Length: 308
Image 1 (cartoon, rainbow, N blue to C red):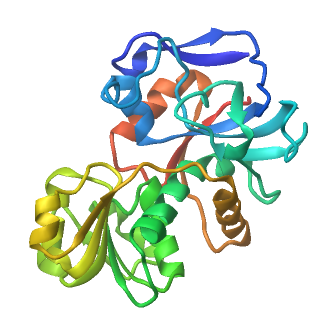
Image 2: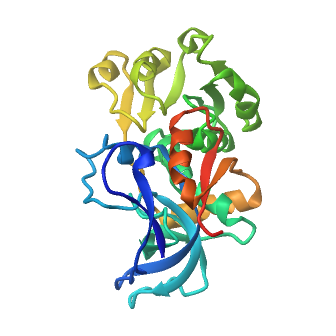
């Protein structure tokens, strides 16, 4: 098999493509032939070394958390999948940027036949994150209002659509070039963060989904109504600010959940949700793919075509 390996933390350019032995699945694991993977911000954060204190990983390792492909072998305890099944999943914190990957069977959902492998690979981590942020941590209900910071990105794309499906009033922030894209996701309003102050545009919101952090998160407290919720995927909200504004702050790590992913994949297959692929890179160009994602202003997801 071929695999991208990181031997030293730092720039994505430090990753190399190597030949490796095919891994053997354990009792509860599945070996998949990877057709496509996708890039998430966690990938370049891990590669840079910024996550070492929270996610210690022995070097060398193969980055990548999202994969879609075909099962080629299963462990002796696996009864839910068999060779030949087409699957997709948030496979763990590493391993997707390779032609073959070992995955716990409980992390994998069946790929709907109507989805390409590239589309399937773009779904898991971002869409699971969006669903869990809105519904498990944000408690979003029909008729409520939600502000999504970074609405054009992978998680933002899924969140805007899921919030609209839930019957919420959706406001998205982003750069000017993303205005039409975010509107196409169903957002009711758009705020250009470079030229407009979102805190002067909206007030009394039920929920803020913070995908940016820093000053954006700090200023978001002022737009929440008493009893509102700020959910962040990037930084733990300040408990003092939450108390002072009579709001709730939540920070979480996305949970890999195959049954939940299957339901979300069904929404994609039906057309109720859609995935926008910003760009596609070859496995040999993974470093450029991570650099492109890190540069920002990506609409939807960056995909790595593993099978050529």
